[in-house]
Image 1 (tube, helix red, strand yellow):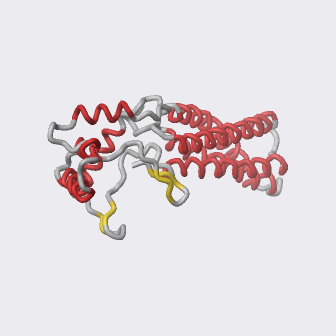
Image 2 (tube, one colour; image 1 turned 90 degrees about the horizontal axis):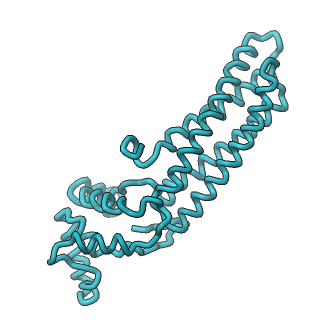
Image 3 (tube, helix red, strand yellow; image 1 turned 180 degrees about the vertical axis):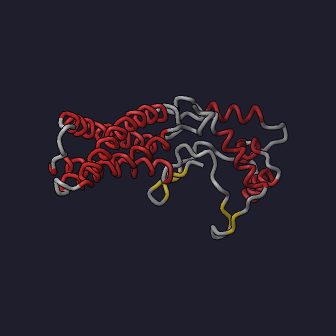
Amino acid sequence: MTGFIEPNVHPIIVHFVLAFLTAGPIALLVSAISPQDSRRRASLQAAGDWMLALGVVFAGLAIAAGLQAYYSVNHDAPSHAAMTLHRNWAFGTVGVFLVLAFWRYTKRSEAPTVLLSALLVLASSLVVLTGLKGGQLVYRYGLGVASLPAITGDGHDHDHGDIGQAEKKEAATESTASADGHDHDHGAKEAAVETEAPNDAVTSMDMTMMAPKDVVAAYHRALEESDAAQVQSILLPDVFIAESGGAERS
């Protein structure tokens, strides 16, 4: 599955959950408050019931794909806490919908009541909140992101040349970290980089003997030459920077 969509199909499946478990309850609520002799009432009832059923099915698939991502995507301690929070919200939200969907299933031959429909609409807000917490995993913590663009100047000068290619190679090297995603020890990664680096590469040990300007010059030279191994040997993989309420690990 990883070769099909990087790194996991969970982000795709959750879009179906968001669509069905918001549109379905709204359709049932409109059906419940519509006049009994209205043709729209029967149509919305059928559409709402189908969307509710499909939403619960896709929610189960999203939970399965999400757990696979939880135990496989590379992450650190802060992002692990955020993932756990998102997982717990997902469990609670799906649990609420299972109860309400079963309630509706037992009354499927009858028109939906206003009470049940209103509870389903309120439960839809849980889906939205869970989705927001899932989005933070990508946009705040960078989970599952293979590479980031190189930002130069004030952030509006986007260089798509060799520097971008070097960073893509660097990101590909980092993706070989521990498969279970819970091993935050970067010692193995450092050893692999030192093995692949050429003999004349600048290593972290060499940097202690160099002037800061020479280290910066070596770093930029490695970027210009698209030498990912050299870039990795200069950077410290275990640096953790707390900035603007988020975490920067590169």
